[in-house]
Length: 390
Image (cartoon, rainbow, N blue to C red; front, side):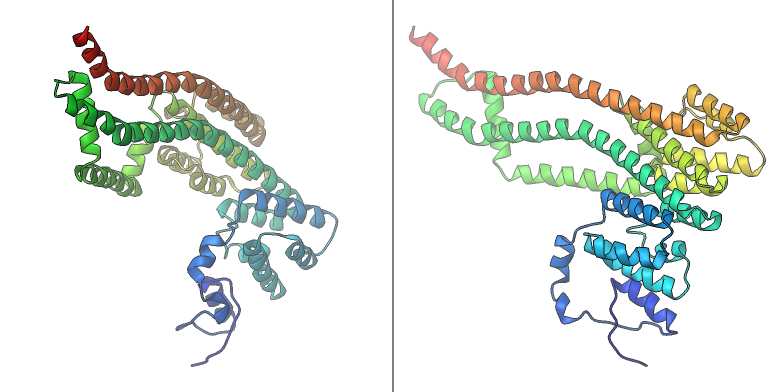
């Protein structure tokens, strides 16, 4: 049994390093400069899409200029700002120095290089077009990041408005209304039914019973999360989300755009269709579409066309399946897929703008109505007292 010190990014990297030396890891401990790993993990900057886009663009430019991969990695290690990515690139460089292919080395670090990235780099290595493939990867990541930001924009505004509105209503019911309730009690008169009902709600919110409500909400959320982790639950919930009014069509358009962009980019980079379908299936993040792609792959292996099985599903509109069919017949499938992706990117953009424009007045009216109802409930008894005096 051997003992010693080895520098590594994490446990997996440590095991890989030792395995290359013919050793197996039995136990290990961190050095003194990592006394607070928990805090390090909190403040450590994650590797984002922007980091990977910049890395891929720079990598492609230098490879295209004829610079050797080891020299490229040395330059990128010096220029990259994200320290986590720097550590990974150092490990990749060491692997390449030992004769490990670039794609195989990158596959050891899924937190930076996903399955799609590895598949495209591998095809670039085989075809000798690594620079072109890396540029396609960067372009794909930029498109995916743009699409993700559109969806986040659609959700950020209503969610923020709901949270703020909830806090305002909760404050009025738990702090403002009780003060009025004390004044009402001192008058000894009978309160209006509407006012009394809101006071009852306020009493519940300020009582220990509210903990039961919170626990119930937490239990329901945990149960749904656990159910979603199962294959059956994920399929059921994803199918249901596609049928939700207003949001369902947006989710469907995002899924189709992601499918077309990913599949088209992989085929354009020379990845085999069956492999491209596997990678695409893992990246679209919708169980119903994944199920369709599994059937598509099976049909392709039996000699059928891609569009046949897609046309049988309710997820893909006729326009999509027809364009894919035309692309298969003309030999320009990747071009058609990219056109589909561009079209649905624009559709998502338009849908997000329409949704934001629709939800803003609806939320203002609803929230204004709720707050107005609370204010009316607080002043109803005062109006009754004034009427009695008159």
